[in-house]
Each structure stands twice: as C-alpha cells, then as structure tokens.
Image (cartoon, rainbow, N blue to C red):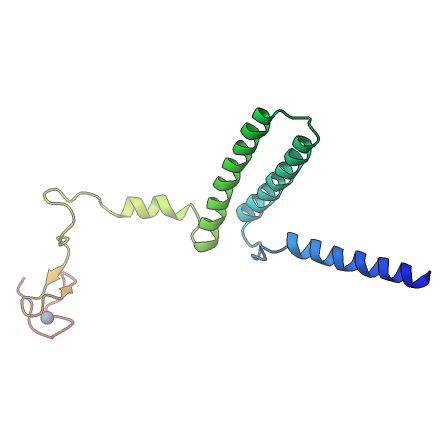
Length: 146
Ligand SMILES: [Zn+2]
C-alpha cells in the first residue's frame, strides 16, 4: 500500500514539475513591465483558447461561434507574440527615445533624396566619406578639396 502512495506522490511531483516548467518556458528576465504584461496576456489567451476548445467539445458552442471566437483569440495572440518579439529583440530601446531621434534627423534636404548626404566630404582619391570639417581623408590621408 505504501508503495502505491509513494508512486502516486512521485507521479504528482513529476507532473507538477513538468507543468511548471512548461509554463515557465519563456525564461526572459522580466526587467520590462510591458513585456511582463504581454506575457500575462499571452497566458490568459492560451487559457481562453483551452477553455474554448473544452466548451466546444462539450457541445456548448456552435461550430460557427467556436471558429469566430478562436480566430479572434488567435489574432490577438499573434499581435501579442509580435509585440513580445519586438520587445525581446530590442529591449534596450525605450519608446520615449524614438520621437526625439526622429526630430533630430532632418528629413528631406531638398533636391534629390538619399544618395550622398550633403554633410559628408567625399575623398577625391579613394571616395571614402569624411566628415565635412576634415581637411584630410581619414582613409587614405589625401587632402580633401572643400
Ligand atoms: Zn581618401
């Protein structure tokens, strides 16, 4: 009898460990509250999907309802996964910094866009781009005509 109890306890422990590990699989350090919020929403959506499937299999939902609810959840989930990925790939860029960056960059310098910006000094010898205030090419050392 005691062996049976032991076996049951062991099974529970293993099951619990696996369950917990499965839930904790995204081990991203939660330094970002936004990320934590997204992870929680993702977990809620997973749970919703599970419940939805359960209710559908119980016959509580019509196929139509099930499909539309499911695609709604999946759409939300995709958006959250996208946001999480963005946060995880660029965690050191707070959103506040971006508008300032955009302001600094003066867009459209009139005339032709792209190509060589007016602020660089192209070396006549090696075509390297140098800052406008440099008198000598940083790459080949030749004098810059400007
Ligand atoms: Zn040069």
